[in-house]
Length: 223
Image (cartoon, rainbow, N blue to C red):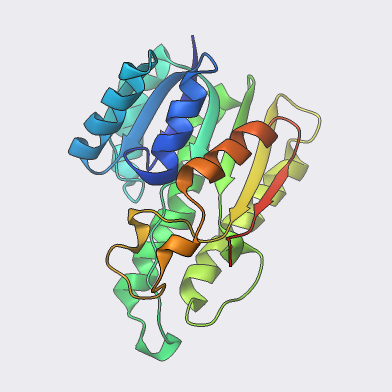
């Protein structure tokens, strides 16, 4: 059975993508750091009649990625890989910390690169990779310098792979969306009113409807 592998799959956009894709015949494999959230998302998908698996994985950890491939890859037919896990810290650049810098690049950039490389022998047989980048990968934003830098890096990685694998069985789609009303903002005051943002379900529906025919998807927030 074809598998959709989704990082950051326990909540928000990752969970909504899993629910929609399960209805299209995909076995959903959710990856994330928090087991309770993965279980909850998995139960929702099962209750909809979908087939789902999950395991904890921190995309910042090369060891976790290696162990996942060692333990699970031979049993999977990955036709869709969605790099959805992300983290953001916001505020004036002069107040940013090295820990924030490292966390954002490890999660938003290095994690997707390492996981793609680890899965590459299977992905090259026929797969679509969707990079969830955010509109921070399209333009600079005030008080988001390091977050934007990490997303521009992922954009560059995706666009380069598009050229490298042009005409092959491996497709790469870069998806850029504005802020969403998700748990991403729970510990941040960067956006005061999340109700004006699109829901993760809205964004997931657009991505699922468009990824087969577009290499770039842009979804602005409701500002």
